[in-house]
Image (cartoon, rainbow, N blue to C red; front, side):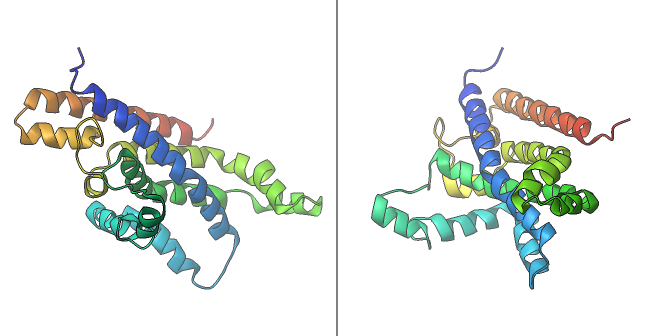
Length: 222
């Protein structure tokens, strides 16, 4: 039977991971398409910056988020002074942290998927007078959808396991910002091995299920 202490972090993790993935997916797909289509000066640098969250330590990402969105941050100070809004030590902050970490997984998968689309099909649509927007929604996006969905599922799994950036931005407040990963940390620190084992099993099963789904999505059709 599920420990009552495991339910709040589980529900919060599902909410945070889902919203974070949705928040990351839209701009990631748009930027992936733009980077795949346009050859502009500095494209490789932009590509590297967009992929950077994949390789930077999560604590460094958390620090960047604080610098930008903290109460004294570049944008955060304006939000706080003008609207009294701050994401620090809130579940919304956990969403922002997880979305930053998840973003490059969607971006890289989407870009690879768009690069795999046959250009002849897109050019044929152009010769028929279709606009670039119509080509995107009627040709490119449907053909790249499997790769994009696979990236989204990987991003969801990554968002569910996010720890470092979330801890720095949202803190570890039970019932408020404590996700499964943070709950595992707290249970281990408190010597509650039974709860830690249950939480580890929950997040492991969830991530394995997502990876199995991704494998089925990207499996070539017979």
